[in-house]
Length: 431
Image 1 (tube, one colour):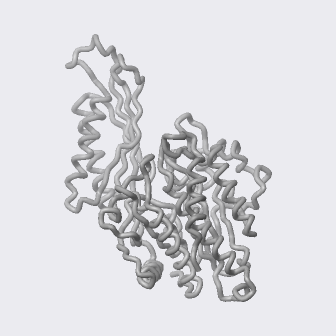
Image 2: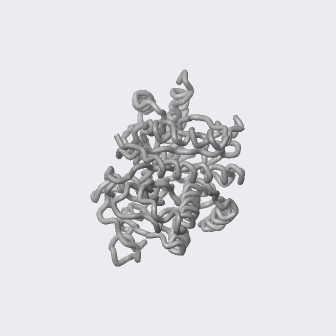
Image 3: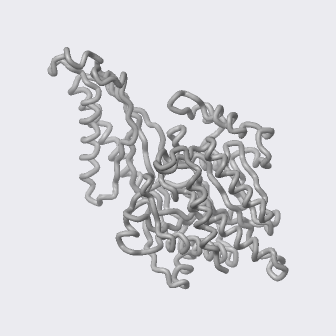
């Protein structure tokens, strides 16, 4: 079996146009107008081939092959369709369109008379996760956290946007809060019953430079970085920008600048050079050019594949922040915002991907993932999980310049299909 590469690229190009920022990257937040259009496009394609379509109350979609039979174990594959602001055209949606291509290819094959009667085949479902990027509520992998039970009912009100609007309100506006708001059959309640999930596969662009620099077309992920996110609030004294002498200022912005550089210096000392720190969101109040900032609030996240190093560097950086604030005579409040555990992926699934690549003569590298993905939530829930990467040109992602060669996109989707077929023929055993 072969996938239709032209159809895959055509779908990606069409979905690229569903953005709130035309000409400035792709901005497609979960529960917004462009997200709804993308979901509808994918649902329509699925229904055209006779697939079942179900949704849960937070917007995760599950699309099943027409040949699926009740009670059989299932292989899940997919990714997300939401983006960061002014993001790239492949992050997440590439894995979704490739999973759709797998369904289209298998539906055509399974629908013929000779292949349709094999009772030994596993079911195959495509999964589209909601709110992976955390662009609305600042919490990554939100949909898969609800799906696996890490988040519950109370989190619908706890998760809010920058204006204080809760996730529950977003769902109501999107018609996802009640069964009457959508024509999809609900998987009710969340979390999902994953007891029959034999495997989870996620195909993704690397979002880093390793494969592109090495000229290797495929990455097979053996572990996903964990992360810990802090919210830091520095509070000084607001005052007139011109009338306040420099030696009488308690400036929250200059304190924040020193904190940010100190965080960078702390992590730069990692001898393995695998720990990363990012201050990605910052807010200054009152945010006026002629007023000394009284309050600065920012997020700080640390990532590594080793939880001890994540916590160690996070605590070291937080201690430094408090010392800087004390030295400058301002207050410092630090709270844990969110976190995810580092996760080794399933060795058995990884071996199937490796053997499949070798049979196809595809060079590959076994590697870790610095970015977190929905797949790690499924792995944490006990589902045997594997991930496949394709190169990102110049390692760029989460920016309009994000790109991957067409031949690499098609090759990755083909490897996904062949891996699904191998798993259907030789079902993995859940531990």
